[in-house]
Length: 391
Image (cartoon, rainbow, N blue to C red; front, side, top):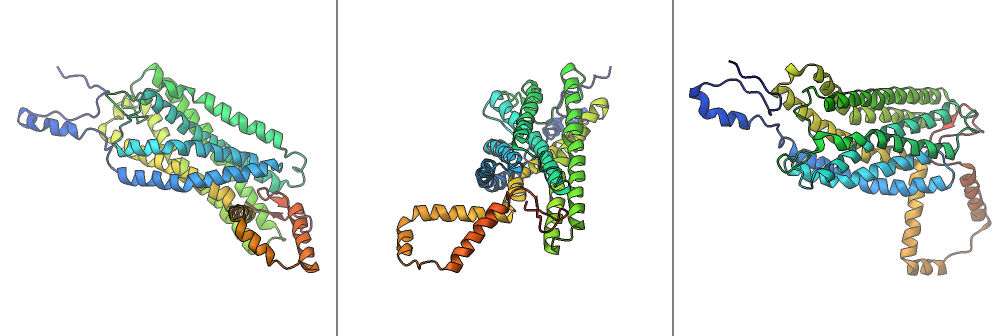
């Protein structure tokens, strides 16, 4: 009688004869997913993201909070995005060490589930806040006159808080996922589950959640980002008050936003869709399929991490006004740290002339009239159809 195939083994090997029984153990050893493949590149990627993303997000949190205090609407979403990315970056050393140990989680199942919970929350809070940012920029550019009385900080705070709470509540089932049970015998933390295609109640619930994540957490935001950024680009290209260099900068920014979204989140959700679809075809769950899934899963996780380092650079630190404000802040910090050199220079300071006083007054007037550096504004001298994109 032919033995029944079990779906909870790490792979399915072909039958072997008695003559080949000596090589059985060797064959079984190759059934484990290739955990060590790509270990060094992934650890290096996590390290680069941490080195770049940590200071960039810390600076962004400070700069955007200064803009929030100035009643800037867009800064509310940017500040929430930076806080979210910063929270995830603090867990990145754990993931890097986990990969370096050959996918062994030494800190217990609770730490694994908390870290995984932060990962899932970071991904979808980031996605929804990116949609909020694009919608706010779209309204400020395309409907600049109509949105002046509608864009307020209070709704922005409520929307940001709602995004955080809803995503946190939806991902509470993460604590019940078997993939997070990093026990002593199997120290894998949220690796692709080998029993995923085995029908049971838990996997059915997980399958429904995964379909919702693909549709609501990726496809709809992608459509929204593509539509809003296309509208911004079309409106700016029709403007007659912007220079060619300014239009090119806006074009680069809008394209970069969509491309970054696709690079960081498309592979993960495509893999998620494939895994969920395979739930309906358990007979196709071969070792080769599991090996491919594991390789793609590792790559997709690494790509999704890049988002936390690029977001502050793309959305905040690329702004000319923000860079000027950052330089001014660093200059003030340097002056406070070196009061002696400051006092020496003040002794040789020449009394300002009338022209310098007028120039200072003009600069102050430009600062007051220039609006918020994070928000697109409409310059009345150029007409309502010539928005100035500063971020």
